[in-house]
Amino acid sequence: MAEVAQILQRYHLDSAHFKVERIGSGHIHATYKLTGPRSYVLQRVNKNVFTQPELIASNLRRAADYLKWNSPDYLFPTVIPSAGGKEMEYDEEGFPWRLFPYIDNTITIDSVSSADQATQAAMAFGRLSRLLDKADVSSFHPTIPRFHDLALRKVQFEEALTGAGDRAQPAAQAIESAKRFFPLVDEYEALIRSGSLKERIVHNDTKINNVLFDRTTGKTVAVIDLDTLMPGYFIYDLGDMVRTFVCPVSEEEQDFSRIAFRKEIYEALVEGYLSEMGPVMTEGEKASLSFAGRMMTYIMALRFLADYLRGNTYYHITYPEQNLVRAGNQLRLLEILSENLG
Ligand code: GN1
Ligand code: MG
Image 1 (spheres, rainbow, N blue to C red):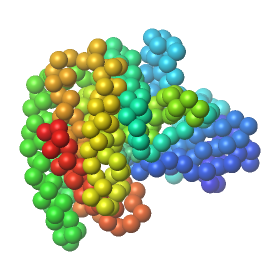
Image 2 (tube, rainbow, N blue to C red):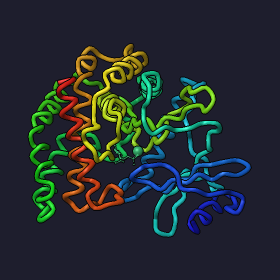
Image 3 (spheres, protein in one colour):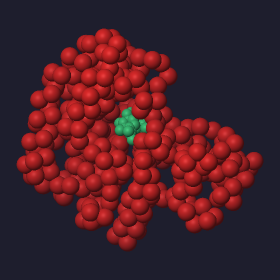
């Protein structure tokens, strides 16, 4: 917490005036809520994952400028500059920090419990991409290169497997299962090569807990966690919603018999997403709707499994087998999605 106090000085804020608590269930950054006369969210960005954190700031500035001009009523959370006018402040270890206003009377939820929530959240993510539909994609930069490139993630999985040594043995079943889905990579590459997907600005992490809901009305207020707002394809956003909304349990669930496909949630989220994005989507994009969920569930299975095989260097874990469990969970979900959407 001493580092929180140090960083706050650069914003001319005194940590003694705030209750500081760590919040969020993210695997990558450290996020704190500062409760005081005015409340804030302070975040330490993981510089090992985001090796060029300035790109996060520049993408957000681009988007904010564009939206302010073209959609002035849209609430797009932006950082508070430090006293020195900077969008990020670096600590002694070289980690960048960012400060956001805390948006009052909002809540986040960790799982989708109704079709209406699915529709509303999908509309919120869809709206952001739609409002940026005509923005100049070339003025945004990848904050993590080839982040959701399934072909790259397959190669990284294979490299991790080659170097896994003893760690491959407990993962044998997951490895076999992951390999059975390799044809999805060919399908992905063919889809990208066909040019039928438009390159757009997408969020890339469309979990339900990245939507702020109004505590009183239950309506969506804003989407948050914009560190991967960058060029990509709509399947990344729609697919991550399918992955995280339709299943009644999360990627952390160890009892795989609880993994299931909730058809009404799937239909509600697709309907919500299309109600925003439909008018700007190409026919080719619309033809790829059912691929999205399988593709993103598979990419997450490969990423979790590769991290397990590498010795857990990327995702934060609280027990040794956690990434293997997450991978097994996502592979089971992928089987179920393939039965329902394949
Ligand atoms: C990471 O840290 P968090 O939870 O926002 C990851 C996402 C994964 C997610 C899986 C930059 O997001 O891609 O979907 O974990 N973000 C990064 O829970 O790798
Ligand atoms: Mg995230």
